[in-house]
Length: 246
Image: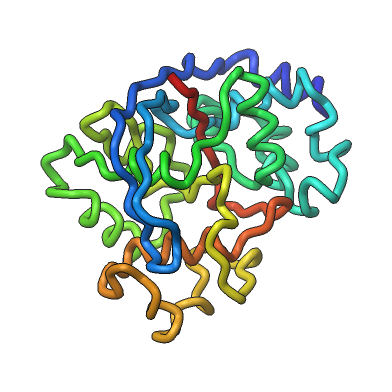
């Protein structure tokens, strides 16, 4: 199976992943119970989410992370399930350059390590996400988020197709959810692993009492989604990108 996938991939190579610098900043936690604001050092981040094509190359070189070989401790049964039919039927250019999904935190972490990188911390990801969009359609990132939340996430959208921010990084919002290294810092009490879109069970009024800004619905949804995850979970709208320290 892996040999077949690699042969299919050869006709549609993924573009090399570029990285951009995210300037140093002060990260202010979203929840009051978190630690006080902390300094985030400048770092570099992948300009786009990791693609199916890039992750397939990783799996071909590290077969222990294939769907056939991975241990259930590191990924649930839906791990890379979208490859079963789509990839064996043929990998066209669009599919190769869609963000890889159905990957666990463990697998995403292993991929980044194989590239000499790492997953971003929550503070780093949130810092990068603050950069304003360079797009006449949107005045700020909140416009992108609310537009995203108000519709179904796009099926078949390729990386780099939603927006670019002022740091030169694409699609932190509007394409897929993304893993962070410390996604489990905030704890709630629901389970949304089977949710295709938003973790609807998490949004009762009492859950937002500790939020620094209870009116910031967009950010609350993001934090609540992270809190619903466990390291071996997968999701058809959950991907990742990598960072490097400077």
